[in-house]
Length: 327
Ligand code: PBG
Image (tube, rainbow, N blue to C red; front, side, top):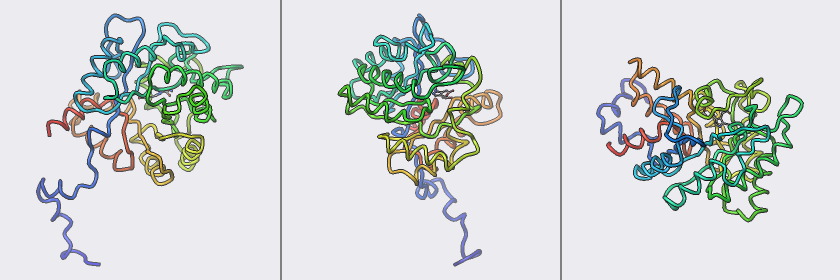
């Protein structure tokens, strides 16, 4: 094998055009999914303090925002709902007139099939205790929760979701949801499984955005432990066997090894979630003048794609799409 001085790695880095020619990973607008929050019972959108630039939308402001996303060429959004009342069962999650269901119907009327409508499927925004499932005896009851997820999946599909995305990390959730959808005739509603979702401190800002911090304990008994990688592959394989159409890794940047492992292990599309903490860290550092926001954003998203993600859920979707259109 040739070595220096015959080999000079810098030759293909000399000009921007040369670099563009040999660049393997190209981030595109089609890779982006925008997470959006919609809140019941507010008259105007409310800024989310911990996530500069993001808001809790009204249905009206959501419609405007989603229209702008389509104009930018963004292919998909994922909706999170904040109900005006919470209870132990998380009733808002599967109510026919629940906030996400109302938002889905409005966006479908406005945008037809020009925007893929994804719905996060979990109970934590809707329960008074803030856990992702039904609590009994101080712990989250896996199997009782599956019935609630099945019902929420039917409600979201009925309201027009193209994709439901279970994020609660209950065992058997994909099979329960697939069965419920098929049983109700929603055979074409896809399931994007949050397959490898870690118990992460990087969800901190999201819990303000979705008003879903657990009132007691934490999520470590159902979300994955940061020290494990092979377990993520197992989670993904189980979800695919249960009928998941695509799988997700979450968070993104601290778990690029997991993105790569899933990319190699399964044949279905792999998504990665560039989560709230990843977003807010860049925003805060940029606001302090400590790093270049746009460059850090593109480097993050490119790294996630390079690791093997087919699409990326990111709060930077709009900024990235606008910048990609300019370039
Ligand atoms: C709900 C859910 C969470 C996120 C997505 N869905 C929070 C959690 O599990 O605590 C986090 C998203 C983000 O931080 O951007 N189960």
